[in-house]
Length: 407
Image (cartoon, rainbow, N blue to C red; front, side, top):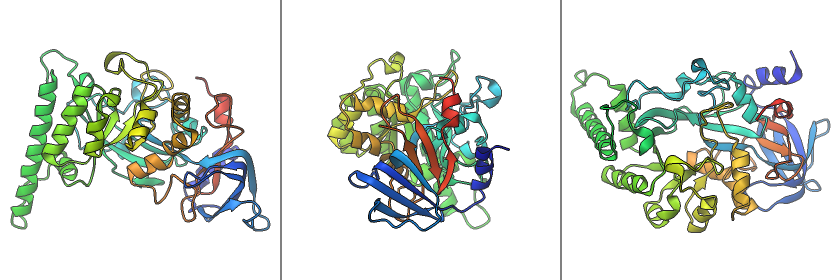
């Protein structure tokens, strides 16, 4: 058993380890850059952050050095762990095609932490995944949030249920002629009918005498959670017309929604801001065709300028290795109007806040998890390497997977 495999095996069983990280440039995502900075991690949690001259490192504690250190990256939306590295049906669990509406499907039941794709993104600084059922069905299932250092789904989960994933537009049309939904109007009508049915189910549950409740319905239970705002509706929509339909549906049922994809978001910025909607933006380098034909490389900068909360995502690709790398998607945004600091926040603290996990991850602050990504240069420069990934104070990657990966 090599060193990295051993570390991965034991890290899930440990509450956390102790480590000091010293970087020429330390970006905390919670304040200005610290030159010659130190992050002190004790028992898996950040215990001190500051200049090397001001932070005392306990004698004998391992010190890991890097040119640049940033908070562990948080992938805003992914299917990694459900969509595996191989282009084979046996490791593709991100989309169940037997019915258009399946909100009861839970991502945890399909996640494979041992898939090489998980270690691949981890080696590039991704420490937290918001992953699960992907777009391609009217309601494809649920998502959840997990750390990338664990091989067992029972460890490292930050949110066992995060959102219910839906799709509007061409991506949700039935693949067989004569099957529903075949049009946009049918999509909204089917969603509306399911939400109304869930409302009625919740009413009967509340009014029924004890012991005489209606039989459990897992589909309706999931949508009741959406109606009660316990789970947001994560809706993939690219066309402006579909985004506006989503906003109307959310207003009708008073839903918390998160917009995913949003290729034409720049056309409806005022409506998004008025609705107080957060956006998980499509991969910046996604191919501009079909519903995404009008995407813009400047959308991230426009969302930032409009004051609309957003995060970057890796998304899903139908070809090997099945995922983009959220670090590189963010990097391209810096070349198209988004500042370094704003890009970093949209890869760390931004998605952490959007997902409701900012008390644990997303920035390097005292009391938070000791998750750090280390680089040998500017993280957004393509020639830079991720030279270390730390999760809960454990060095879980030193870049070996990166150097051995094919793209």
